[in-house]
Image 1: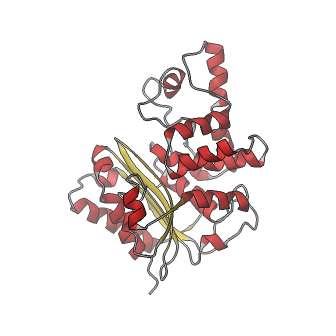
Image 2 (image 1 turned 90 degrees about the vertical axis):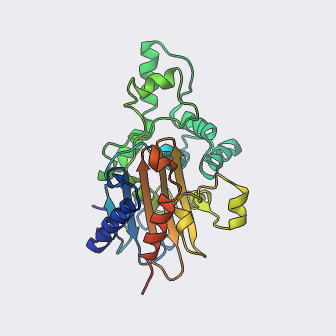
Image 3 (image 1 turned 30 degrees about the horizontal axis):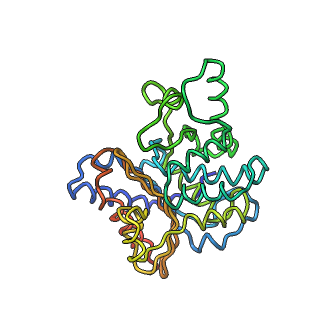
Length: 309
């Protein structure tokens, strides 16, 4: 079952938007952009978890542009690791201690790669280091597939082709981590905007893991749109991303991702006088990564399209 009802009108809005963005001088953008946009009749925060398994909120409507394309997600993959950590905690596979909570907060609020490395180690029972003998490496690789196995067990069609088993890096992987990437980086993380939107929808609707766990995740994903707070934090995950384009008074929960070849964002937005919505936009390539106006423009136009007449 799809996690939203397809809307032809929203699909046309996306097509018109992509064309308009190309006409602004972004030649070829249509092939480098993936967007998933889902609109709701009421706040997801009030949904609760009637059955606990991320079923679609009633009357959710949406559309996507290249939404099933599997792309390198950069730091957006940290949303997956956050949800997995809460699932492990629920199953008593992790010890809930202050250091884990500190790492989860740094991973999401500050997008710390160091914190993400610790979280991946805890989720998989592996550590980074030098190359391993073949048998030990095979066992290590099997352990590093635990998050992928958990995702597959959800049974969502959007999960086909997803890969969430790599740490995130500043200077890149070394040793056994580099070997695990594959000689042509074929084992890099992969997510689509569709599956990212479904995961974020589930967290915001308290429909995955448990309502208390979703409440903790929502608290970490909350972003301030206050100009003063943003100015004090140049890496605030709002400026240069979807949140920058939102109208005054908007409430934002998000996880951004950026590197030399990608600029992505996954956001849930509530604005008075507008339908609440999930918006995930992935853009790839050096030009998109450097374009600090692209995602804000997408956020501005699609939030305006959610205005209630």
